[in-house]
Length: 257
Length: 137
Image (cartoon, rainbow over all chains, first blue to last red; front, side, top):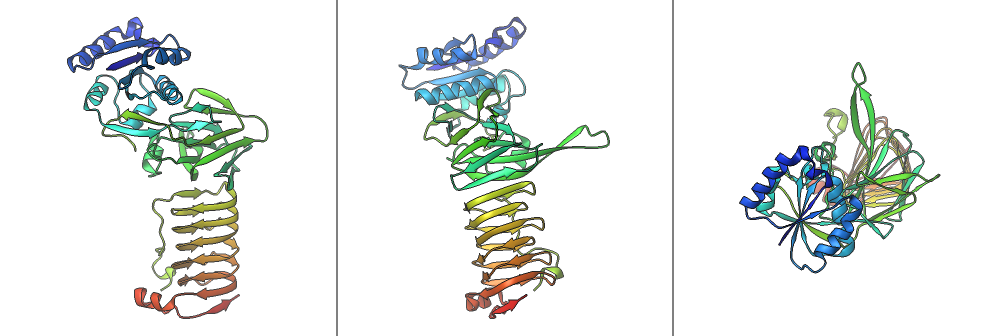
């Protein structure tokens, strides 16, 4: 049984033509199922509980953006619902879909039909928040303790610290950085950016630190905000660890892991 | 025999598991399974099952254990390398060094005892005449 959870903006009039084409393609491949419309990100939790709790084998397809995808996976991890998850990125600039090797729009339906499946681990923060791709913060005044064995500090205030479960950017792809959500390790990545070129318009990003970890504690001399999966905010101190929760994901051939 | 003759380091790291960049400082008990590149500061212990590359700007106050190592920076502590140790001219080592084979450039400073272990194996595999024990100030 297929379930489709839609981003609230997908039903806007301006996207009607695209949505119709997408649904036509879904039907032509025999992948049609029940549609779930969440009114907001906060209602994803309730929608999934209501629709999936009694289902044993199902495929849940997220139609929308990275935020809805991440929210859906973190809810599934917390509920331990057994389902395979697909992703149809409906909007542009979806980094997670790029990492999963899924193109925007109708191409994603072909990926869905091929059902190439990878199991990924969903790590957790402070034992109660699950995340999918990464969390990020500015390095200033931060100390990260890795595996309860050693601490890492960056002396550059312009640097950013990222705890990655999934490779997201071209930077990750080109550095062979071994970020892989199929393993139980998290990667602590410190990057520094500098402006280059005559007009200083181009931004050059380089990796200053890279550590493979099982758990990480991030503390700050004064409370700081950490951004989870690009949208959720949590305050320091944070304990991040790999969990045993796995989710089956439908991925594309060109995935980054 | 010496790196200076070819300009190519004997120990190269292409896909490091850990990078400690120039602006990074690490303190505590670091243990890795893969290759490590250090260009920053390290205090404590630094152990890996594979190779370590200590860059010119690196400042290490730690005992180092690795399979192979290239030292170009400053190290205060014991260095134990199971196979090859390459020491460049910019290296400044304060501590005892143990390795199966050592390749050292002129200009490097070592204050400590150099011990070369398993010389027979080294001689058979690489042809290096590594059967020596010396103290170099």
